Image 1 (cartoon, helix red, strand yellow):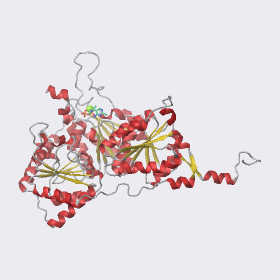
Image 2: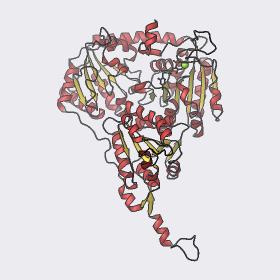
Image 3: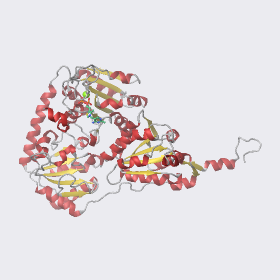
Image 4: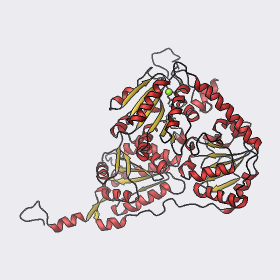
Length: 590
Ligand SMILES: Cc1ncc(C[n+]2csc(CCOP(=O)(O)OP(=O)(O)O)c2C)c(N)n1
Ligand SMILES: [Mg+2]
């Protein structure tokens, strides 16, 4: 073997042979690239360090985070924004567990994401012999994922990744777990056999066409309505059929409510947008068409006082049409009179073409009485809000700060907008209008804190737009070190911390009079702006709307990583923001 004269040099035949080999690392990279996946969010370590290096060397964008949970959130929202599974890559056991939170979040929110984790040796794990980072990760991931797979042989990597992609994006999207034991990466394989084992997934999210009878049933019900309402959910935003949805709203002339992440699907300033009259249209409507929106807690389960019911279990008088990709969604909370099952694009197109066929261009507009009542309520509320926003109290409060944010977003409608907190979330959602689809990304189905900085990174990377984040000082809790990630990649992110000295408010006191502060209270007057300065970013302390405006305008002009510590009146918030009623002790207090 080898060259007799020089044992280190190889014969050309050997070089040839080596060039024709591939390995597990390479096949993972090749399989992802073959399927148009060019970005990985993760954190290196045994056994995936070389995978991160080689992915970068192969031209993929490899974004290293300071915590897997944030990388996972980034991957999940990248999936939402791009309709391709976002990839999160972690090490075994503890890294995997850190990523798992985001995997469950992706599944709950119907975001396509794949968590790829390295794992320890099967035979040792299965005999529980105490391997390095030993854990049966596949078993743990399964209940939290839409699907979970393990690959043991390099020649199965192509199939494993193809299955993961299909599971993540087809039907109702979700989080998928892929378990890659350490030994897999080092396995070598004939390069040609490796190439042939890869799968370029054909039609990963096939259209699902609704039945003609279901379309007709839905339209008959809609036409019978005297007080119709359409609710757009984030599923409608995910579908990327913005023109068709706009056409449906405008052709029917029906007032609509966008759920939080559907804001901007049509501009929030659209005359049919009923956001400012939410508490009037929900109990008032007689027929409600849900498009990619579930009747979960965010819509009070379709019943109770919100919907005109007598108590929390009582149904209102509404009849529902539900457009959803999952046949199991209908009747989950109340009766659905007209389920329309299919992908949102196919369903909305089918509705439009059936409307056109039967009614020509003259689909009957809803009764003027309903439209006028909605408009009156909305205009009244908008005028009231304008008065509140025009005030300039000292110290700055949520409203006077958001008056600035509102102007900045209006002037920069393409900017991505990230939002988390309690009051910092609820006030922002209702005050800051969005003008374009999929710009607003937030706490989602769980109302989860800690998504912010991961979302900022992914939004900047996936869209290349300026990112603005409005963060409660507590919501920002889990995120501090990702400021380093943002600075390291020099991303155009402007984080604004609404600093009210705590969770909901900064005013609670310890009833015992002891030295510990109350559990919801933080260090008074903390300077979050100093955190980003540690990593070379721009820090701004803003105590007035004018300072906030200047800081945000400068951040957007410079595209430099910026953190603005917006000092907010610590008495201004309410317990749990808008969802005080879900809080058992708060409900008792009064
Ligand atoms: C992971 C997680 N932990 C805890 C909570 C409970 N929670 C809801 S809002 C919130 C923080 C609210 O405070 P802040 O972000 O400062 O907003 P503010 O109301 O003060 O503006 C917390 C801890 C949560 N939703 N998610
Ligand atoms: Mg706070």
